[in-house]
Figure 1 (cartoon, rainbow, N blue to C red):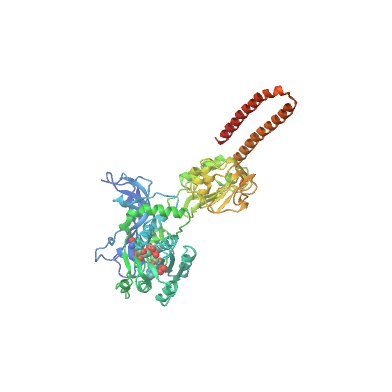
Figure 2 (figure 1 turned 45 degrees about the vertical axis):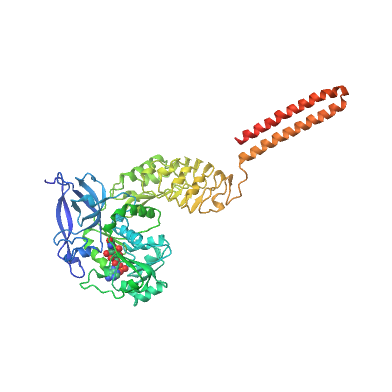
Length: 613
Ligand SMILES: NC(=O)c1ccc[n+]([C@@H]2O[C@H](COP(=O)([O-])OP(=O)(O)OC[C@H]3O[C@@H](n4cnc5c(N)ncnc54)[C@H](OP(=O)(O)O)[C@@H]3O)[C@@H](O)[C@H]2O)c1
């Protein structure tokens, strides 16, 4: 059935012929064709607009003439190259996809691709991170690192881990996963810049430039005096030979790839393989596709660690599909620093609709006497990424116009806590300090800004209580409420915020005990509040309610004693004056005295009971 819709021009990268040896740019060619914007009627295919393409070393294997059956099919000379990418659905005949969906998976190296088997695509769940991450940390390489380290390597805290090609798409993650597990991690890479990244950005314990080492065995001995428990193998060849000599007994080698061999017509031999026997090494190859069922588990793990800033990711981004061939062959010369990504198109308007709505509502809900927002937040400017240039707005990434931070400190804003923030779905930082904002901090604040890591509302006039619901802003690292008019107690639930590294409620009207936080904050965080007590301030005395009980009980006892004394004194004088005859009446008086003792006692007991209630 014929496809309808617009005819779109479509630049594509074609493989000219099978490759022998090192690939060059000449092996690939950029051509121009057309594609229909609608899928053929009745088909379950998708038309996608490709946004980001992934350059992966395994693609080299697909460029060779298929002599043996492999886990992945060879490219066809004259046809478009295929690989992993991120795309947006333009038209769909498939019930699981609709136009506008963002997906990652196998696509073509072209602007638009007709995907006839969309079942292999994964719909993108989280868009609060750069979409290009789905070619790397949140895509195939990320899941490969996760599976290869956590499943194949059987790591244990305190073990020693070595990663080769450590600054690349997979390696940088393996090292960080190993650090999270409490391992000692060393990486190697092919330049000083990459070694610096390993040590200073990814947190490896040590790293070396393998190209500068005369003797790889000596380099490994220097880094691992007691040997290697886990080797994450990305390169093979002489590196693997040197590693085998340095493995510990019962060590594990996760063979992820052997990039040093991919372009050789004659692969190098391994000389120290007998170490596998003598050291009882478990050496296991694996491929991502066999473990794809672990992707959902991995995605949750990775997204959380990204949001918490516990994992970072470095990408090497080139612009334009015409740069894809050179970017791909650059992998085999080590030109890429981090994950190699090619931008085909950016799916950007001037902002995502929800972020635009968010900023519009924030602007509408605040009074702006100094015209910071009035002059800068111009929603009529629809040029690409323009909201990221608004005053006080930071975006996630230069290439992704998602609002990450709002920094509106000291702008003279008045009004209540701004409306609409829940629409800034990627917001991780909110600074409204040093303004004239007033009214309560919303009781449902965690629904409005669920992912904030920094919240600064200091030096305003916010009043009322600190909402206990703040404890559900679980990513908070910094919470500054200093110098407001907040009263009541600091909710004990805030002690659940175990990521807090800075906390300040000084200069408010707070009272009651300070919650017990995992990180202790100095007294300066609490000063100038009328009734705060507990560590690090002075110890809390008995709760106010108890002391009132003491006063009441004391007064009651005092009253009884005083009454008894007065009655006693009166009776003493009375008895001294009355005639003997009257003494008989004394019996009655005593009875009366005794009788009034009973009810008083019981009144006191009742009151005690009342206090206990
Ligand atoms: N098993 C799977 O399912 C799976 C999935 C993804 C990737 N992989 C494999 O994992 C490895 C890393 O892939 P990646 O995507 O993360 O690539 P990458 O590390 O981002 O890029 C490749 C890097 O390999 C290094 N390299 C290139 N030629 C080399 C050589 N002759 N000797 C030593 N190092 C060389 C270069 O870094 P330097 O500057 O440091 O030399 C280059 O930057 C590859 O072997 C790949 O095939 C396997």
